[in-house]
Amino acid sequence: MEKKKRHYPGNGVKQQKGRARTGMPAAARGQRVRMTEDVARRAEASKNASAHSARRDGLFCPIDGRCGGCELLRTPYRKQLKEKQERMEALFADLLGDEAAVSPIAGMQDPRYYRNKVVSPYVAVYDRRARKRRILCGMYERGTHRVIDSRECLIENPEAKRIILTVRELMGNFGMTPYDEDADTGFLRHVQVRVGHTSGEVMVTLVTREEDFPASRSFVRALKKAHPSITTVVQNVNTRKTNVIMGDKERTLYGPGFILDSLCGLTFRISSKSFYQVNSDQTEVLYTRAIEMAGLAGDETVMDAYCGTGTIGLVAARGVNGGPGAARVIGVEERPDAVADARNNARHNGIDAEFVAADAGAFMRDLAARGESLDVLLMDPPRSGSTPDFLKAACTLAPRRIVYISCNPETQARDASYLVEHGYRIVEMQPVDMFPHTPHVENILAFERA
Ligand SMILES: C[S@@+](CC[C@H](N)C(=O)[O-])C[C@H]1O[C@@H](n2cnc3c(N)ncnc32)[C@H](O)[C@@H]1O
Image (cartoon, rainbow, N blue to C red):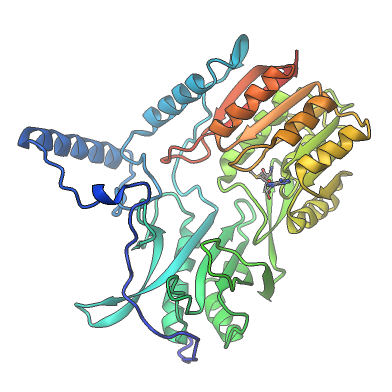
């Protein structure tokens, strides 16, 4: 491993500062909660019982309860699934008609190590006992911006996690300083590692505060030597004082600057900033069910709205389970880099599809104004859900079916109410567990024009 030290900007070391827990009034902070001995004993007994059940499931995590990642780790997996199903049925109770088919949530066989994308901040702290500075990397503590150091994680891809730890080791060897959020100093802000689920290709993105990256070649060489699995390394420059991870500017330090991976029998190109579902096994389930729920006959024009790298639209064009695919696919996505990936993906898979870089709402409005027609609308908006102008234009275009995929069922329920009020009815609901051990649920709704 390289030992050469180079100067990196902002070498000052600062004690990590805890932030106030969000959402907690100042007066409540530090308030002592009085518990009778009996209540305290019962609470402790229930905590131990949950910890035992988590261990029984092979899910012991040394930082459980502190890390903001897996809130449900102590709930047995089957119970997690049952609770998520009940939540979805309650949330959509008023919108699901009597004829709507509600499928049981699709869970994982082995709900561990499913995250194909691992992102870690790096922060310097002064270790009083050892009298030296240490760099922490891992997860944020629940409700704070304090980093909890972790060497292993039950939901992250193990090779990605190992790379995150190697970067920390190399930072010491290269004299590379971690970013200090308060002072806006230091060099390395975050590292993102993406692993191709079937291809095994690995992309490391080093997010730096400055463009100038001294000894970048030796750094990458040392990283590659420790992890021959790495197929590309990208530097992303984020000069802003913000908690948004990625900046706008990028340069490829090694390899092609993207990775390839396969999903549902197609190959996809993924760049560092493009959206790509984090749980690949469950993504195959999600896409297959969504296309099944679209009920394609083979002659449809299908819109893939909020398409990212075009994954859903391209799977729709090809068809699932040997069934027919769409006759024509149009995708719309606001990120130009993701659209570039989508166009490449179409070419690479020999599929004829159009991808447009635009705001989905504006694009739909234009289509509606031009009097275009659409048979099936597949939509997969971000957590904030869709927008009134998108939904209004969708109702004007009046596709026969709408399949709405969402990682935030609360905003999906809001948008579903609009569609139901404007002439659609829900015919099918399929929850999918994309994020085991967390409260998050992915949900698919199929609507038909009433
Ligand atoms: C949940 S992701 C879905 C991506 C894709 N369907 C997939 O499965 O990989 C949502 C996508 O919507 C894009 N997006 C967010 N707001 C948008 C807007 N107003 N117009 C178009 N695309 C948008 C994001 O960049 C992101 O790629």
